[in-house]
Image (tube, rainbow, N blue to C red; front, side, top):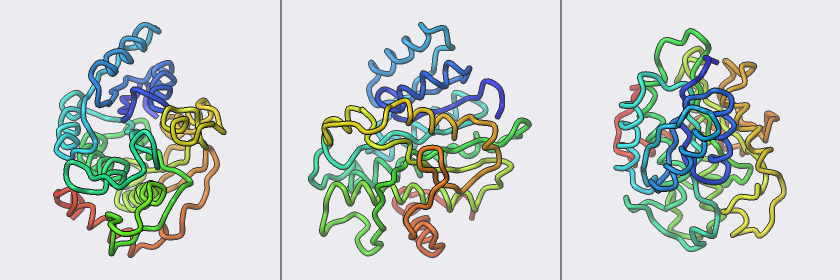
Length: 280
């Protein structure tokens, strides 16, 4: 891993993303932080700068709107000539505070699939040129913050118009992230960019968990440890296409290993985000 890496963290104003920003900044990373509230982003940047670390740059976007995601990729690309690590952390849970009923994004897609998966898909593909530069100190890294809570994708009803539940929608979006990570790892040389997913911890004491579940199981620090490891631990250079349960390699849902399902998800994702295949 390059010294003082440039790292983009989505969903960096609260919970895991906020704590991860503190950790990586303390290790010398040059951060670009994403959020959807300019005031909160400025506060986080100020607090990190006050700790003695380099002041992060900030980028604003609502991930429920793919036009804003496209602009986010452009904004980041305009800030830096290289991006060493992308942590796709932003997302919504299975219930409160985002509701348990079916909702749709600005583009008319099921909200959890749009925010948790499609936004990261679109952002990642938009930033690959900034990550695919000459790598003299190990490959760039893409980290997908997923979950052990996984539900198989029904390609006949990808937007879950029938039999909807927040838990099912959340689990589908998280498995889609993992499937995307494995498929992308097959398309990128591990010497250039590695792609890995993880379940950072179980029911960390974040606002999302406490509102919906009412209690925590693992500490926030455990989630930060696991995610920071995938982002920056030099011992993981070259390891790609993996899924981790905290810091241990694990097996995701069996659908993740189905190459036909992964290719179907890839093609459907290109269509839904309205972008050409960068590997075609």
